[in-house]
Amino acid sequence: MKAKIVEIAHVRRRFGYRRVHDLLRPEFPGVNHKRVYRLYSDANLAVRKRAKVKRPIGERTPLNAATKVNEVWSMDFVSDSLANGRRLKCLTVADDYSHECVDIAVDYGISGLYVTRLLDQAARFRGYPAAVRTDNGPEFTSRAFIAWTQEHGIKHILIEPGRPMQNGYIESFNGKFRDECLNEHWFQSLHQARTEIASWRRDYNEVRPHSSIGRIPPARFAEQHRRHAGDAARHPTPTEIH
Image (tube, rainbow, N blue to C red; front, side, top):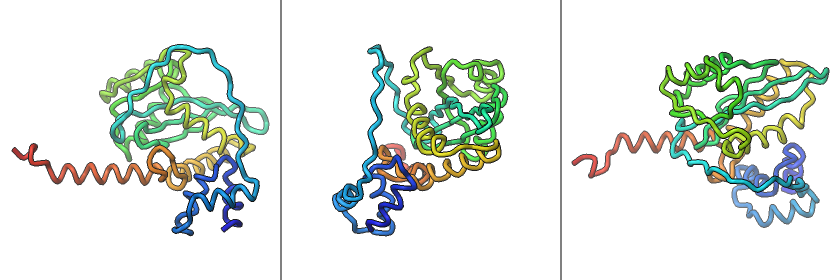
């Protein structure tokens, strides 16, 4: 078991012992998290804590928690670069409720029209969200994007300028994306970047446990929610019947 713990920790270098324990459970179903912690500590695998950045104290607008899948999609851009120095732009889209990564688009440039095409493509499989949350970037305030939200009856939640934590769900996701994917690869080409990022996205959705949704992967949590919602629709309550 110790060898397996070391193997997981070396592959997933930003995982603490809790997430290592989550990934061990299918192979070692009876293992206790305290034992994992002892073996993890004995192997000197503790993740080095990042220094906290001091930020000015200011008023924060609380996020209204979503209550179902597709209620709100949050999105933002993350920048990276190829080994030759050419800049890359990544559009990240996440479901606020399930924490699934709806999509990550990677290209040299992404316009407002480009964003709407990607969202239409995602909606073919997931349906359209009731609302989208973005910052005030030109891609999200363009005529193409505003027309798209109006055409599909989607509420557009714009955060205040300079208040990124009003888009806290996607900010949290982007931190994981940078730490676990972008900082771990030195992309030689756009094709390689798209391939590696798509692989990380699949792992994030289908394998990586998420602490705020019962320590299971987002895709499994979303499927459970859809199943429960379907069961509730098929079996109305006595109040609904009368």
